[in-house]
Amino acid sequence: MIVADRKSLEEILGMVKDYNNILIVGCKGCVTVCNVGGEKEVEILASALKIARKKEERELSIETTVIERQCDNEYVDQLKEKVGNYEAVVSMACGVGPQFLSEAYREQKFYPALNTTFFGGAVTHGIWEERCAGCGTCIIHDFDGLCPVARCAKSLLHGPCGGSSKGKCEISKETICIWDSIVAKKIEQGRLNDLLVVRPAKDWRTARDGGPRRSIREELTR
Ligand code: SF4
Ligand code: SF4
Image 1 (cartoon, rainbow, N blue to C red):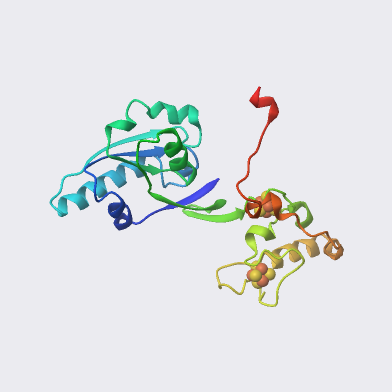
Image 2: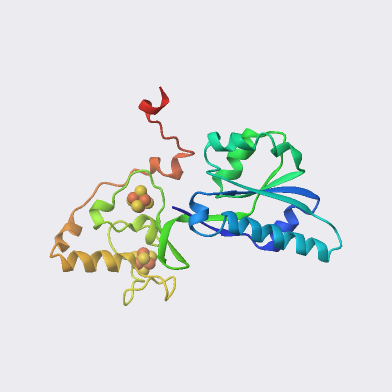
């Protein structure tokens, strides 16, 4: 899923400082699962903004709503009756959500309440970790399902750098060296020789380096 963190209250307050009547829109997709943009978080942000404004002796009228997915025009359309009733709209979706809203409602102003961080999952309650960088050409079959593109700080594809030490990456004591994990798993399975294969250079044109990407499924477009 897409993982995100909420921006600080100060930053969001700064974004809406000129408005007295706003709508906060949450999303029932990934940001609900990672506890940052669902119903509960929308209400918490609304309360926090109101309290902060009260301290400034200014009223702030806030309405809230949570739609199924902000990355799908079918659900974005459901806002058409209300989106014009506010001076501005704060989106609590990943970075895709406010852009879909902005494209659908050109006359309205949209502000992101979240910082979108990575594609990952929960490794334990309350802790999410990155697993995929969306490179567009998955190669993790070469590495027993572990991704050096997303999980090695240097995206090295042919083995560890000299900074790997005791299973940790040189960037921090908390970060595992994914190359240590890849090599350990190959040794466990008696397949270390797999890593001696010289693979052709990765095609990065399918990654972000090739510009904004599209995915077309012909059978669904008919
Ligand atoms: S190789 Fe690319 S698509 Fe596959 S997990 Fe890594 S970043 Fe994601
Ligand atoms: S120590 Fe390991 S994970 Fe860190 S940059 Fe080097 S090879 Fe990549």
